[in-house]
Image (cartoon, rainbow, N blue to C red; front, side, top):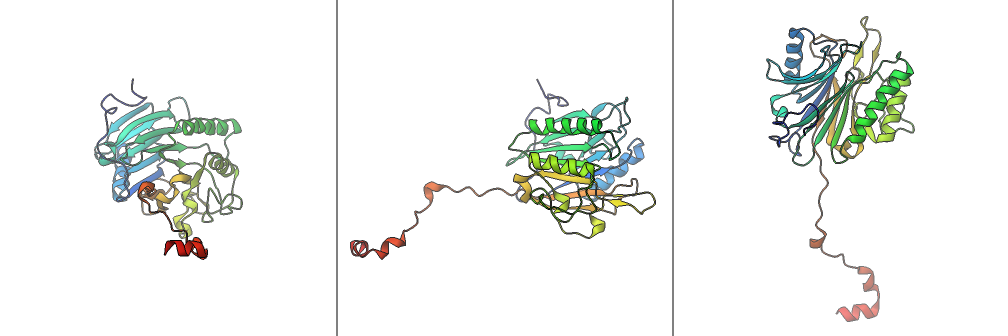
Length: 301
């Protein structure tokens, strides 16, 4: 038996490793609004390559059903949508190098998709999301976070886990009482979706990486209204706390082709491992306090 979305060939040991202590992994997330036209798919693939992103999470791909396709660019797209809902679907675009490390992937719903990758030192799990908007009804929000919680509960505790995508959540810059899950570099004021996201992070031990790196405000904003007046930080990259030090930077890329009102969010990762100490080879420390004892000094001389 193979996991959902995984072929027999993919079930074999992957080739290569997704992330190492010596080489950086670049992770991105982008609400592209649509990939219905072939031209748009090629633009997204071009921008992925332009910004050297290895794994690119996508929201609102507007593709129906679920599947895995190889694009003309050579990239591989994992996607899931639904014909019977207004939600436009999610996807994960992989470079040719990274697709060789893919272990399994699961199309959960038109709002959630997961993929797991092989690493020599640490496996990586990616969860791409497209959360309900602030105006959505409570039941819809509860259903989304309920499904997300089920996915997180199934993740291996040994994996480096990233939850990325359009959360439609403003977490703000006030981290009082929340300094364990976010920094002071967020923007705006927390809304209901932001409170839900912060609560989720506290319960599960995740860090909102876009709020911990100091950048100009324009490099924190991830969405701009059509008239250019409203600008918010609603697309996020979360990582489990144990792997927080492996994230070197998270910021938006404003130079991407203007096919969406969202900016591409790019995260730089380099694996940091704990140093293993072989205690059998460690020399015992000398207790110099014993030298204060006259009898002990005379005995050692």
